[in-house]
Image (tube, rainbow, N blue to C red; front, side):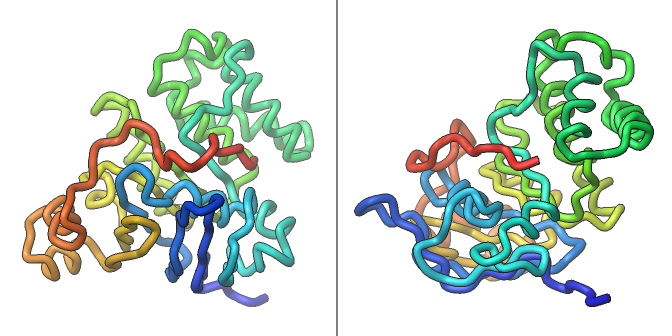
Length: 263
């Protein structure tokens, strides 16, 4: 069996919407079993990159391989290998937490006994057992985000995309999500994370890519980037390299439509 050392390989990717160039020749590689944080302000192209990597849209040019599969020629292989949690929740608020997870298990074609065990396991892992049989509409923002991520993990993907996963969450809920990411990493899952929270990238990522105006302007470990720019924080780095700060999140790439979930 061939071992995949690079979970994601991107070379020369470009994407435009009409005359608006969103990605301008992006190259990046994500080793398996690591966290890669793509950091940038609104409109930088972060969500567009996730949409390309997860086969939702096609690049105009360039080569992309995800989990060893070519996204153009082998999209089904990519989709079987990944999970995606977008900026906007995919939960059905009319269903309970347990029913949302059962629905995802059915969509993943899990055998009934295996699905029942997986639902119980995820409810416990994400601290939702006590609220499992309540309508999701009654959940707090942090609980909804945890349920959303749990739904992504029903089929045990080894590569997950988290597009602004903590946008709009309070600090405690944000840190809860950070711990979940660390737990996934300890289990060997590869995480591709987009964020505007500089501290989030600093805390979680093995590698940070700084995306500005569709170009990857710098890449390295948080420590390497800070040393390169002579700053103490990633905000210092971004300001030094681009001439402006990465702003706190409101909503990602203005040129993008809402990210459709792949489960």
